[in-house]
Length: 120
Image (tube, rainbow, N blue to C red):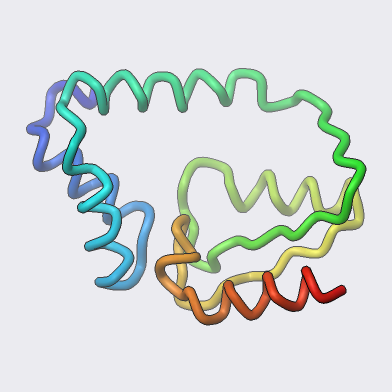
């Protein structure tokens, strides 16, 4: 379906969907520069196909840090993280003023969270 849109429109939509701040948007646009339309559409297809196996069980045997942007509307990211948190007892840290690329939208907050996690 994405192939119906111009490359510029696709890149802008991806960047807008995954970011909240102007810095995040600019970062995402710069990451998309090298990709052509065919490759972006292919990568999107691979990404969506990965969700077909969304009920697989994954056991992680080490401490886990779940960071999720409060404004993350990408796929089922919020839903999956909430379910995983309930199932595993792992806490979720909600990153304010951030979407899917929360480390770029709010890097200071993310870095503090990672430092606290590593210090523990």
